[in-house]
Image (tube, rainbow, N blue to C red; front, side, top):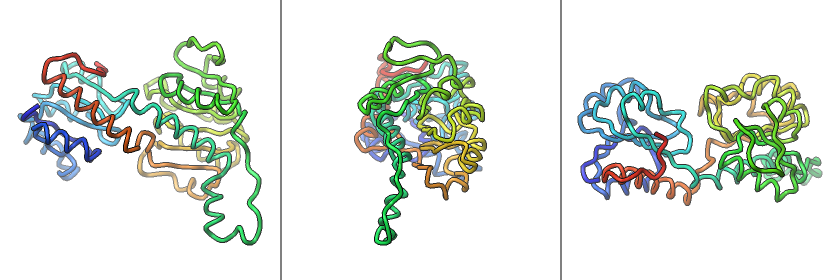
Length: 316
């Protein structure tokens, strides 16, 4: 990959940058230029940029792709490709790869962790101990996770891994996906509304598409109800965030565990004071081990492209 011009859209795992440099790539960092000057930076370096490496923070939109006439491949450091303009890539003949499978375990682990944290109010319990309040009395009773009816919205790789983990807690599993899957122990529901009406914990793990944007609306939230818990490890725009906040504040929803938000890192401030909400900063796959595996997959796809070999994880 010597002298391959690679545009990095956002600061990524340092190991990835180090390995690209070690292989002789010429790295151009979009984030080193002022945000209002990004297009000028792209045009000034367009002749040398053949590859874009992006992630869920800053992807490759139509304007970026149009500014890069020599672009051949976009490799996203994520499983989701909603930040890549796939229509424009197809129009231009630009290849696209992602990093599936290697992050499945981490995201599934976090989903279960969030569910337990919300039901057992672990962050609030931690604050209770640290503040010294325990010396003045015991902590209020909470709710267990074991045996809860878990609904999975999107039974793909990550959704299935979540379901398998929840089974270990003796949780009955149901799901809604684009089609019925060959999992006879899991009950299929034909809509998100039907699923929410028949579970205690609803986990959003589907891809973000035009069809799934705002799939968690007021009706779904109300169906989940004041004892129900929403877990979102998918994408922020899956959820009508205004309706979610209202439901949590008004007590129409029991709680929420959120790793993703609509306008990251800007979070509705109303959520900060709620003990029935547990939030993490979009870290579903952010472990050292998985980040290294994702980086290796990005590199392997770039190497395959340069060598003319089949891509390992092609999106298109």
